[in-house]
Image (cartoon, rainbow, N blue to C red; front, side, top):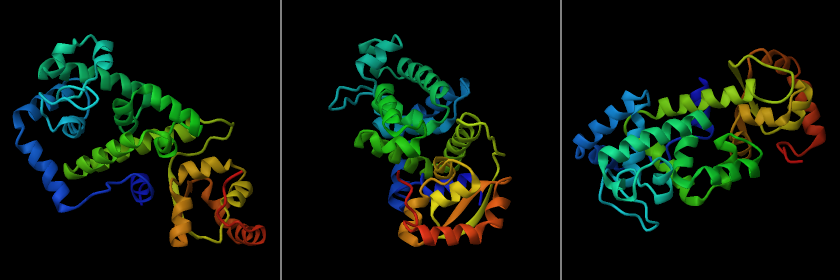
Length: 276
């Protein structure tokens, strides 16, 4: 299983893959072809992925005349403060050409800051300040860790985005991008002197294994185990088993000590407790 499949299986995935959902998103796109073509051209012109057209899709259904209850306007649902930040006048927020050009600049800047499109979508919805607060509360810059501290509306917004990308066949690209960013953060920007190969190997474990014991035996921080394996705690609790992903050069150590780790885990109890 690839790294992107790991994230898809254990954390980020489309929450609604029903035929109705897929047809709904595809129908909105096909009935707004001219607008979609212009948005995709504008994105591609600046080197941005075409799947970002799905942000306008979930924001407004491509309706340039829509105004939200919070006062966001147009296809890209610009709030006045966000528009002013990029020199877009309040009156021009429902101008397709000007608002799209502004959205492209905004999305480019957000990507430079967060380096993955999942966090960009969250920040576009709730603002960089709320994302910063969530990261601080979680002690992590990775969406699958800090998302629970975001507003419920933003969490649902990201889910809608993933569902729309599933409908357009672009979800694997979004997940690959997220996973690459996640791996870079885990392996190359983390604390500590040990650096591991960013390729992951897999093996199966059951709920008898204590993640703290695994971390201790392998001499790594338990938070790295969790970062390499988003959702593993829930998987072990709910299913009693899970795939364990470790850097390729660390996996042999685990396999050599697997029996010892399991014995220690059983003795120490709290089989999957990773809380301090």
